[in-house]
Each structure stands twice: as structure tokens, then as C-alpha cells.
Amino acid sequence: MLNKAPRYLYRPANLGKARIQGVNLEARLSGKDAWASLPELELYGSLGLARSELDDIPGPDNRVEGQSPLRAKFGGGYQFRSLPLKLRFDLSYLPGDWWRESASQRVFESSKLTVGGNASWDADKDTRVVVSLDNLLSRKRHRTDEYLQSEGMVRRLSSSDDHARISIRLEKKL
Image (cartoon, rainbow, N blue to C red; front, side, top):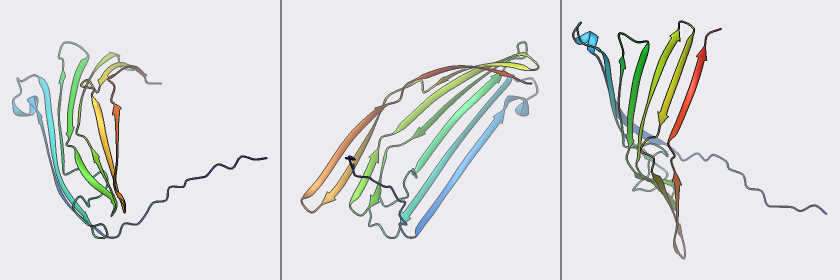
């Protein structure tokens, strides 16, 4: 006899119309562009502000899933003149925020701060070695799902670890 386990299907739902507004500001500065005698230093950054609102889901927190009201990124790089070595770093931030999945469900995800960097060494014109360090400030991420039911509110709390990663990559042109 076959054991019939229940099946669950996920189907995307059309949540009606949405209004989305936002602005992204980006800047990049190279030391060489500012002054010829400055080192091969490059800095860049971006800031994004956004707002969305879904018509068919009552507020508050009725924004598009995954759309954060703020995104920030900062980074840079340095190319050594005397060595075939380039160093880069990145820092990005997303604040924690709520959004609604439906009229009876809302979700909170905690803030996310990511720090990483890499060093790439050109051994020759066809070979490069890249050492990357990602998620250096590893920390727990928290998520809260709230479900409104006729009997009251059900809240599910979960957390996950973001682990730091080290990778070494060898790139060879063929």
C-alpha cells in the first residue's frame, strides 16, 4: 500500500497594484582622477531610499516583500604600484523592517551588516590568485512571522547564523 503524504504547493499571488518610489545615489572617486600623484586608491559608495505601498493589503507595513526603505554600501580598493596586487573592501547595510505577506500575516527581518574584502595577485598575464574574506562580522539574523487568526495572534520566531567565509580562487586564462 502506498503511503500518501499531503502535498503543499506554493503559488505566487497577485497582490494587486503597487506604488513604488525611490532614489539611489552613487559616488565613485579615484585618487588618480583627483590628483596625478595620489596613490591608486578608489572609494565608492551608494545610498538607496525607497518606499512602496500595495493597494490590496491594509497598512501599516504593506510594502513589497524584500524592499527595504534604506540600503547603504561603502567600499574601496588599492592597487599597489610596485606589486601586481590589488586590495578591495566592501561594507553594506540593510536595516531591519516589517512587511506584510497578506492582510493576516506580517514579517520582520533584522538588520544586516556585511563586511568583506579580497586581495588579488596577478602571478602573470594569464594567472590570478584571489583570496576573499566574506561576512567578517558574522552574527545571528532574526525573523518574526506574525499570523492574525480569529483566536488571536500566532508569532513564530526564528534565527539563522551568518558565518564568515574564506575562499581562495585560482583564475587561469586558456
